[in-house]
Image (tube, rainbow, N blue to C red; front, side, top):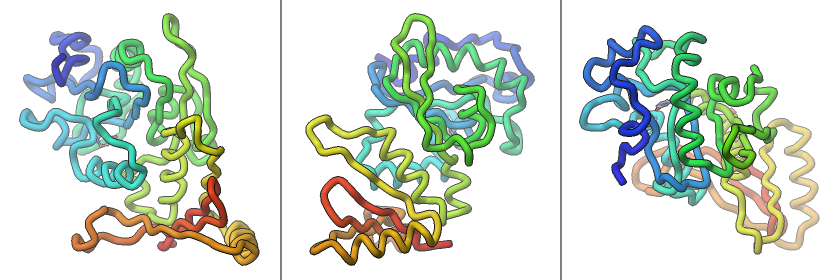
Length: 255
Ligand code: URA
């Protein structure tokens, strides 16, 4: 099966559904990449300039994608196991936000990808993906709350939403929120005990965590860095602290 199997099957070379197609010349659009039977699907906003280069042609391949890759590495979630796509298929000039017309123009392509892959869970990254999949507006309000997406012909799909990695890169204090949302989205094998992963978002949670850790006879810790390579000089973004198996706090190191 070709790497660009969705593009090969759902692309419309004459697409004039919105004003973006002709700007991307020959390629016109970029659909998702990943296994046809992926259980997990990630949906971003729109391809950037790098993603649509003829020698690249991959969603989340630019700097934000590399940032996302490091988070996935920290989560032990292999990118090759995921199907990754965007709400719209074309690169909007100057990286502008996708317009409602562009989003509805691409709606059929997005649904065709979901119907072809039939994922069990979808992670919507950012407000545009949240709205496209759930009709809700307000990523701060709706992140971390699973929704059910019902589409004809496929079993109900659990949809998670979280902040877009480009926002998190600018606002590292919210890193634990994206990290824990992705952790829940990843799911855990059924043999493991239930996992509680709690992001520390304010002083109340921090004090609660300290009280609990002080009571625990032993604790374990782990650093989350931007990369697994300690020599690359990337930042440390949060520290995980656990009082017992199945429970951990994630404390941001930047505010
Ligand atoms: N690259 C993508 O493919 N999608 C985004 O949302 C951001 C960067």
